[in-house]
Image (tube, rainbow, N blue to C red):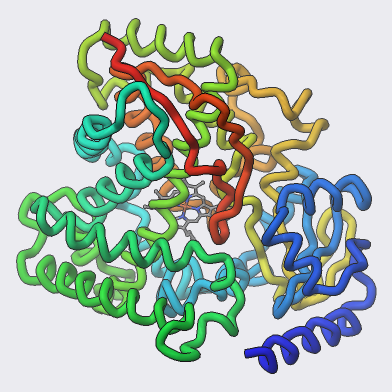
Length: 462
Ligand code: HEM
């Protein structure tokens, strides 16, 4: 493995000489920049911005240089640029061993467009209401087991909620015993891929039974067996009034009238799981953090839930009336985007934001830094949900779900899930900070999450 890493490092040195005229950036070798990017990502980004401004070049092991942008005008050029010139799939290649070669996240060009078109209809905003009950019930089931009056790790609980929601709404699993078997296999795979070392391609290979690569392969095989069984069951049974997303995907046809193969369906299910589960769970955990830091925002959220639902159960069909809670979720996504950046690999020489970039480098719309840009966001560090009450921010200044033709397919689903889950929780529980807890930002694989599992104390409201 060391040889492999050395070879990769040498590749990075070659890359520096291959791209001599990129915007300035940290002078440290790629290995050191990678270590900082993994261990202290926000400090690394903030330091780069302070030294080099809105455009800078980061160099990571085994990757082409990343040119980071945090100016909305430049972000607009990237998101509205030609998808043939700006490949997003290639920039996500590190996920291929997990997601599979047909994953919409990894494809570019016509194959990406075909998969995206097949996947989009079930995620249309209007359809989300079909999942409201599922989200509310999963939240209530989880809440029933939360300890009262003593600290617990809220992030584990939000993960249990989003995992159950994906299993029921996306995979269409109904039986509780199946939910449990699936849940265990999913959780152990997700636990394995939370290891940031697995972001290094050399570590993904099988180097003996207890190497991370071998463990990953075993967990994937276990889950694949369950996924294929689920797909075949849906193919046998047909849609028959079912609302789950897999049932729709099994029947979806492309422009030539062709359906997805079993392998394509497996890869897309894995993609929806990996893209949709941890991201939503982490965003929910961050909203607890922000609400606890801002008791006035929390008080207003309680008032709103009580005013709309009169102290009774939440009606998922009416959560769109909770405008403050929606604003809280969005302001949390601004300050704590779970994915710090998205990438587009240049297929041709291109001028972006007035900078000439050569083919091969990755242009990086930097979500974390753009969301904190004082020109786009006055007093950017201040948590202020009212920013989202009047009017919509520019999609190039606020893009926690990415943008352009690659924008997150699950955006409406995630926002709706956050809203139903938050409303359900706030209607029943008082949130309190865990004594002595100091929540910071920590990395979980490619996501930015609250530290210590987001400690929380709750009490019954009534
Ligand atoms: C708060 C929760 C979520 C966040 C912050 C989030 C964020 C993102 C981001 C940043 C991207 C990359 C976009 C780009 O490159 O421009 C993405 C892509 C994607 N997301 Fe999400 N996501 C969330 C939830 C979900 C959910 C619930 C699902 C589905 C169940 C989902 C499915 C996808 C898929 C399939 C893509 C690939 C789209 C493509 O390449 O065309 N995401 N998401």
